[in-house]
Length: 412
Image (cartoon, rainbow, N blue to C red; front, side, top):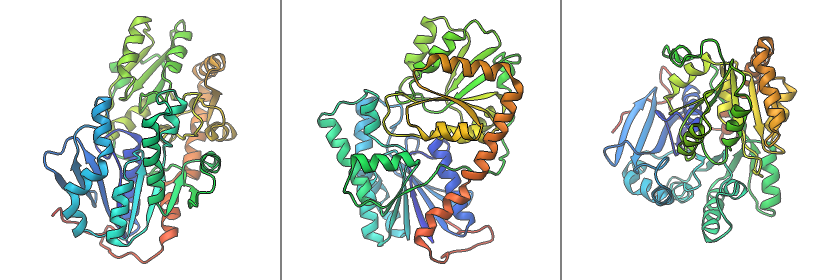
């Protein structure tokens, strides 16, 4: 089958969405499909740049910077994503018809492009929905229910309407659709996050020694540093544990809250927490292997449930997970049932602190919970299962084959 994947970020981005889509695309290829990944790019020098990477045809379409740009500029570029990708990639899409479109949200602005390509190619589309926006922004107090919200809501519904099947990331998300969008005839299913179980050849790193953390228990946070993550939650934890000399926190990533957090750390003279910029995927996975506990934080006001992609990286590295979550999040039950981490509800600072101390003081607890986390990944979150689930809706014999599986692409 010829498959187009649309995603708002791809390698070399270190964001969890880029990793998810890379693993999905590689597994689709391994199973005998021809795979194209089309993505906006702030680094492309030409309108369209094509490359073959690990057997995948990657189409990077120049859009300018979106993530990390000013709110106004980001908004303008993101709203125009479908228009820009069609205008600059039109000839490419005409020459490369596909039999299935898989598109990833966030962003919510692929709907118009998906509808156009479905009409052009006469094919179905599967939406991988990882972020229910703008609802989470309203819950977190970032967005008010005014004209801006109504516009974004229209785009949200537009992407749902463009999809033949929508894969949400947790059972609680099904409840969101039943509660917020009753009567809509969406074809919904739970599609859990996934990760390749293959061990990659990661470069050597020595962050622990470089940062002087040899004798510390390091709580590691990697990923988006934004409003929905309530990073003040982690700052409070670091403040409450400032008298514990063997505990340190390391945050690695980019996002809208980075500069404010830097100022807050300096203002409070916190010496037990460090903040580093995002790194590439290979280096990130190596970095994970150096540290002790994986951190998760989600704003307690969020009404939609989220399974952060970073959790799979922690599981892959056999890290126990310390999570402070919004009420009703399925992740809490999952981690606690499998003894893969310690969880509390965001706002319960005492429980968060006590869980951190328990993990910091007991190496055996860290080891057993880390091993359980790895088993959980292997049993429930493999990329093979995700691909099987998606393709089961669109069964047809592979259209291409080659020695390594999939099709041989030429970037032309």
